[in-house]
Length: 371
Image (cartoon, rainbow, N blue to C red; front, side, top):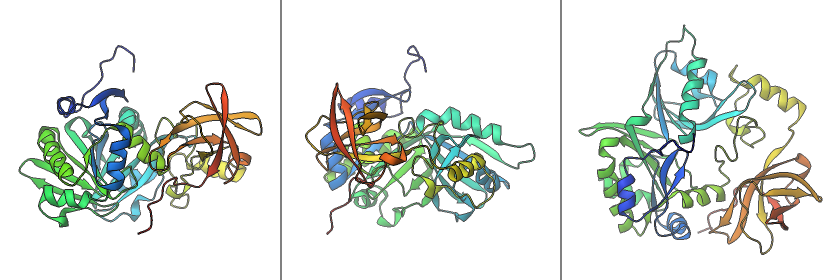
């Protein structure tokens, strides 16, 4: 996107401004980065509940007799394992095994699937899927991204919010499930997924109804002791869980095996785009690996693109990095050679000309305290 291209706005843009949000560019959109403050919003999600505008994300509907076979041919996970109402994390790869996008695929019926894709990859994903279609595929695709808004309600009190908004706790979708219903205001998709590591759900609806739903949910969130949240807290929350961000931790030049996402790649299900490259890479050995690190002493927060050193030599750069509000320490992820990726290895992060020590740790960085 060029600097002269105007930023897109979600249907909730005016409400964000009204509520005092600080707006910033993100993936071609003008999005709220914070309302009251990143740390306060982060802690609200960990301790009570928060609501995020995720209307910038994309939604595709893939249907028809050949939809299951088609998606199993272009995605890494085994979509045939999904029953109607179930969803799974999966990846869309290029022919070299590089990650075009990571996404959630839900099966809404025997012959229909609902895909939620990253905002920055909507056009690339759609174009790739079109190139993968064969003339004999009995598949229909619809891009609902411009007609659909989305909200993520996340936190220990998400069920309380769902009950207040929808009238019954029974409307709460369990983890990795989807509830689809038709209402007088159009279709609703309630998805038991999120990007924070907390219990919660994502709610997609027609854009015409977005403001009404958002205001209702914000009221319920505040009543539960939570608050509306921006992209800043969304980033610190997901990084504490070690969840990758497309464009930072995932790219078309590295495979899901290098990113530590092999669990979501089914090499035994049959052929799919990128499989041959993954099999070859697995046999040859990974050139590097996405490692999680934690700063071990007083240091400024690590940020993307800061150099990473091991045994005195620069070996890579930070992909994602921040100061963890839950841990009170700097955390991050970086692609490093396997020799440096062992848990307990000592790295150095170069910050403004100085090197600060860090230790390779196991993901997630943050774990819920035992009750």
